Length: 258
Image (cartoon, rainbow, N blue to C red; front, top):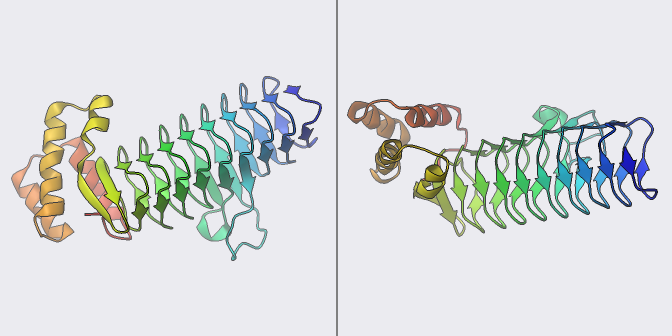
């Protein structure tokens, strides 16, 4: 382990030999860090926290600390971070709470830009981007490949679907449909399919066109969600994207952004 002399690493921490710990970092006693991970400087990591391989934590990021939840009473809860994540300056990731499953989890290959916040009991998938100052309230689930724009706020218990894109400064109080492009001033609205993002990820032209039709019926037909899905089933053949949307609707608790 390459640790700067000014770093404070508790003897109980489990640190791989190939971890680099820069100046003035503080590592708590129940922290585990995998090979190739780098803490640039002034990084604070508290436990219980498990961090995978080849992550980079930039200065003043704070990981695994107690949540900002008045119901939290010091119960044991964890933070889990996968591999190949980039955690930029002043990011904050808080551990879980007993009432929310006792776990905050971040997957692999994510970019958390400066000042992003991941609150207690959030589940962030893989290949996601949280832009500058994006904020996830407690108990938020973000599925793979989602992009949350700068200065967005996502309300507690919301679901953000896979491959969706939330435009900057949006306020999200309901669930964001997979594949969608969502922008709001105060009330979020869906403006159609996240076409550019899907093309970049190799989605076939035919599936994107089919998703356009699904979204027209789902968000512009004037039907409620159950009626819209019934019409889609009558008019269209099934395909993976439609299956994903049906599964998402089934687990939605706060209603959909339309």
